[in-house]
Image 1 (cartoon, rainbow, N blue to C red):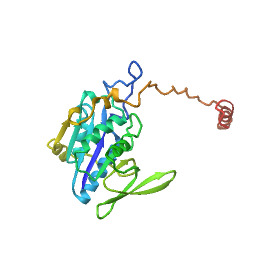
Image 2: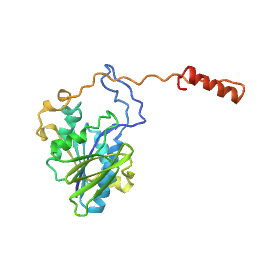
Image 3: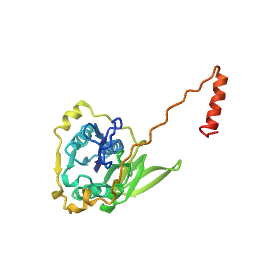
Image 4: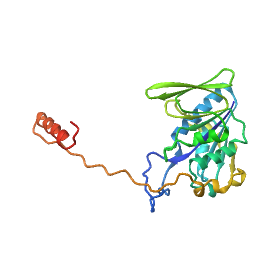
Amino acid sequence: MKIIVCLKQVPDTETQIKIAPGGEKIVTDDIKWVMNPYDEFGVEEALRLKEKFGGDVTVIGMGPKRVTESIRTALAMGADKGILISDAALEGSDSLGTAKALAAVIKGLQFDIIFTGQRGIDEDQGLTGACIADLLGIPQVSLAVKLEVAADGKSVKVNRPVEGQTLVVEAQLPVLITTQKGLNEPRYASLPGIMKAKKKPLEEKALKDLGLDPAEVGLGGRKLKIIKITPPPARAEGKIVQGETPQDKATELARLLHEEAKLI
């Protein structure tokens, strides 16, 4: 089975985010970058399918040279090869521009299943996977929490949550599936895996290798434009409820909830 995983490198969730002057982007100088957590579920599921059905796993990432670190992490987990799409002309691409670049590479590869995270935790748009599937002309199933490949390897059943229930979707291969928490528990890269990853193939492609018009990608090709980034409103200071006895404190708390918070 030929499996492709598209991954994104995002700021660590524990990183302190600062807005850059101009309010259209964040300061990236001191950020710790990691593999998008939702993409980790895609890597893990790809490895499990490989262990069950055989085949190989190719990981594709797009961005500056540092994205190599996240690709190497996937290789250390057990993926077979990686591809980095890196070109200054691609910087600032929106979800559609990113999908065009990824799809351009994928078109030259054999694949049965493509995994992407259901969204990137940085921009939270959740569009790239659907755009890739549309550009490739294949079905897409989103928000997978369970996956079963048919014994003949020609179709897949995917469980996805919907308003407290479970929707089971069946699709023919090839298919693109977006992954989320609940699908599996991603493994850690072992020391032998880390050492092997250094020797696994990692190819780099630039815009000229993709056959794309530069006007379709990058800042100039954006369909969605960031107007302004603003921090969340500051939280109001907490209030300590005063009282001589627990009963007094309870009475005062009820008064505050009723008169000030307007909750009761």
